[in-house]
Each structure stands twice: as structure tokens, then as C-alpha cells.
Length: 82
Image (cartoon, rainbow, N blue to C red):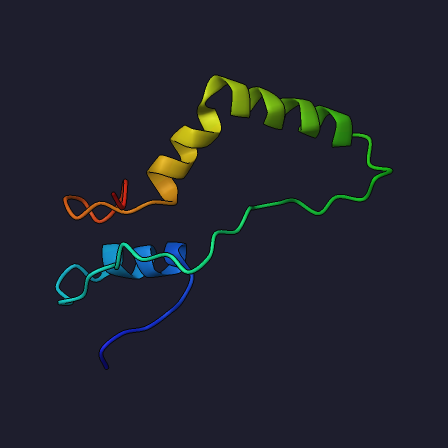
């Protein structure tokens, strides 16, 4: 096999857990997708969830989580792809 196209987080997870494999994650990205939550609009916690997510976006916590868990680094198998 010369290559595979799949979700980046799943490939990163595989590479992290199989460091002896002679595989590399390409810098090429075919698509970018946002993450979301499905919540019934009548749920009492929805407003609080929205507020907390906005706070996390503003204070950089979401970027921190993305960097730690959703990106790739040759050095550690996790971190930035760049």
C-alpha cells in the first residue's frame, strides 16, 4: 500500500500507538471539518454550554485542546502537523 485517505485524528492516533511503523502523515489536507455537539434545544444546560464554549474559544482553551489532541508532531507523535 502506498497511501491511505482517512480522518486525521484517527491516523494520528494510529501513528502515536504504532511508533515502529514506517509511516508518515502527509502535510496535504483534502478537507477541513468543524466539530459540533447535538443537543435538544429545550435542554436546560444549552445556554450554559454555549457560554462556556465561547469562553473557551476566547481564552484559547479550545486551541490548546486542538493542539494537544487533534494535531501531529514527528517528535512525539502528537502536537502540530506543521
